[in-house]
Length: 197
Image (cartoon, rainbow, N blue to C red):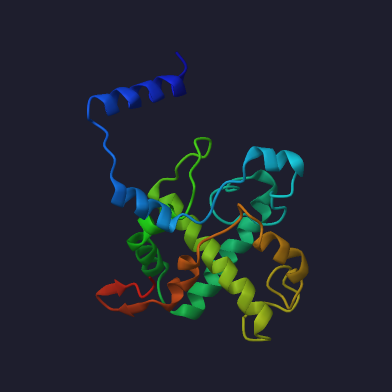
């Protein structure tokens, strides 16, 4: 018996034995937050490459793709700039992300072929992606106040804006707004209080 068949059979046995029960509230809550989905394979077949980013990976679906690795360096630079300007430790933001991790994970459809990410890897991905987007948008909105060099290949004045926008709105290359609201949390010395809903 194949692995999936065996697990499906075990699941049915667990239902019959009363070990798995319907929880309507939990099910409704799950679908309330779900907003980022994996594109069905038949759509990929209709237009090959239409849903595959060529410059930057955001979120878990394309994480680790070899052709997107060069932009990972720029994500780390964005975090350093963001950290410098925010005056808060990256730990503050990781802690705030950790406080809403369950809600963040609930936004994604996690198909069988996409392995779940362990908490530290998931939170680090969110922090890097969020800082990258915030830095990218702020440098393209506010002239001469970002701290990046004018000839910066990513964060310089409008260098990649046209090319990048396409990748930032691609389905399957998304992050939830909860991450982008994170820098606007209220931070006190002893606690991180999330002000996003």
